[in-house]
Amino acid sequence: MPVPWDLLISTAGGVTATIVGVVAGGVVGRHSQNRKWLQESRTAAYERFLQAFGAIEMEHREAFLEQRRPAAEWGPFNAAIQSLSLVASREAADEAERLCEVIEDFTILFHGRQPTDLEELRPFHTALHEGHLRFVNAARRSLDGSQERLARALGGPSPWRGVESFYARGGEAEPKNQPSPVQSPRHP
Image 1: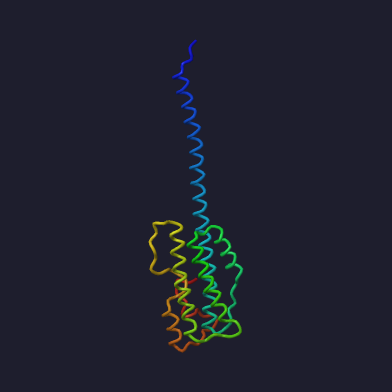
Image 2: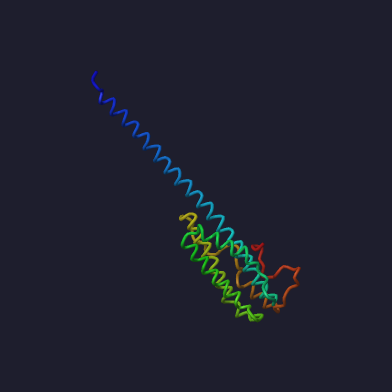
């Protein structure tokens, strides 16, 4: 009996197409799962970093305004930075590093003395405010490149006018059980 080559070729073609389809589907599915995992991991790391940054920034600002040494909890902040280093985009990691440098400089301001000069606070506050916005925008772009840049961030360091108004009233520290006058509703 003669070999039906056209049947054999079409069967072999069908088997080959099926195998290629299964392999390609597996690769595409795995790539999609990896992207989803990275997106979710980045979002969680960015959130943890912003929360830890907010706690450190608020403690330092309140310590400055209340004329006391900061009692910052560095463990959560350092853990958030390490989580960020695993998944952050290069741009977001660079902005986080710049923000950490400003926080370190602000912390050094308190070493061995209690700063009380408002003009001494202004460059740190400005750098924290601008660095926070740059980080937020970098994080947003890494999560979705179509996100628009924000002109100002929600949360983070309060506007400088809040700090100035505190000092315009005499700059006396509030009792510990009262909210700070520079604490806006955006801060927990």
